[in-house]
Image: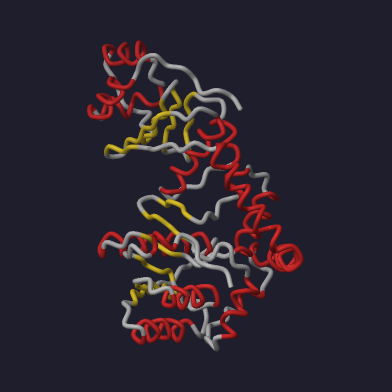
Amino acid sequence: MRDLLHLDLLKKGGVLLAFSGGADSTALFHLLIKHHISFDIAHVNYHTRPSSDAEEQSAIDLATQHHLQCHTHSCRLEGANFEHRAREERYRFFGYLMKKHGYRYLLTAHQLNDRLEWLVMQMCRGSGLSEMLGIRSRDQRGDIEIIRPLLEWDRDSIETYLDEHNIPYHIDDSNDSECYTRNFFRHRYSTPMMREYRNAIRRSFRYLEEDNEQLIKPMNFKTVDTFAYADNPPNIRSLVYGIDKFFKNNGHVLSQHDKEALKKGGEHIIGRHTVVSIEGNYTFIAPYEPNIVMDKGFKEECRKLRVGTKLRGYLYSSPEAMSIILRLKGGLEPPQSD
């Protein structure tokens, strides 16, 4: 049996477990109990299956049995792209709980098979190393710090643990349907690979994560109202990754076209509503306001500061953002190419 990752952090308390009642989150629930970790659980009921209400009640009963708090959220999501909208909905719920109750860490029960499925899917989409390692053992999503303690456990090991300890869990029948992209990759590729090469795959992810830490340097965006800015990292790959992560944290996914355009620096309009201005040592992000009438003095000041033309409309209507620009600009060098 493998140990949980980041136990030293979990023992500090303030832990909220995202709990579905499936094999992975049920195993993590009982392993946290075994390690005497103080935690509560959060369950989202999407009402997508006849068993959804029973699964919610099971989560409540399990938490009550162990004297834990179970936070529940009920929603019905209509329309296309259910997986994306469900993810956004539950993270809004988790973020609300963490802020209201002061939880420090959000735990999700992603495991090694999930990580391999994600890597293979991203590879087939033409992604880079950082995107392929999108499921990390410790990560940040906006203000939420995420820990994934099961990330070195594979699915067979989890199910063996549950069977050996006679722990019941819910089975989602939709996991058998290849209508979902993840299930297609799971059944055709990741499951056979994991059963044959699990130890080598586990080691490879450790090495890849170490390599990624050397390649990708973080961008720490600061925000003032709807204006965001950050120091540029030392290479273009880190720059594009940092901007992409900023948009994901704010509910927008950049297209491949957007990412390729950002590599060239300069100004870009994202989704017809947001301007990204990469100017020397800094990146600025703000709402795109193309119809603002500016006086000549302001335009001349922006020209001298080499402020991008698409950013100027917002700055004209936001003196606070303009004061930040005035403080930061000067002695500019572009990011180095990889």
